[in-house]
Length: 124
Image 1: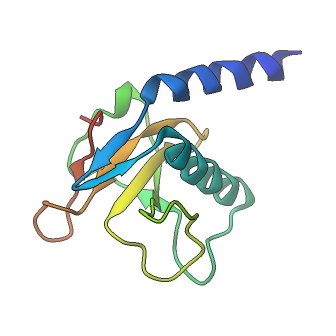
Image 2: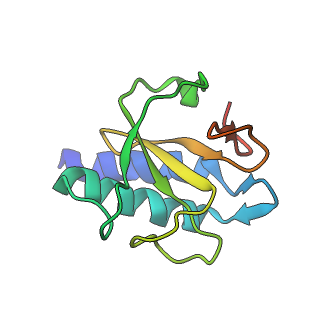
């Protein structure tokens, strides 16, 4: 009976996160949830999307707090089309999850220098 309680806690945590803006792109909470769920499944299965390297370990060189979650973290593309990433060009936006599949935040290359990231709305 503990599993349904855990699922409820995860659902309530996700609902509290709401929509997020990465650069000029607004993502609904359901888009973020879907990308996070896909990332989680790949991490649990120890697989990647298509021939890509995603999800892969995110080292957090930028020093985001990620709602005070402890790593390790994984990054996975968040696509503006609303589709799930299955390989190919990842675009600039990412969801970040913990190894326990908790949503830590969202980050983007848009507006960041070089190959670094900045936080999307709600990620500090």
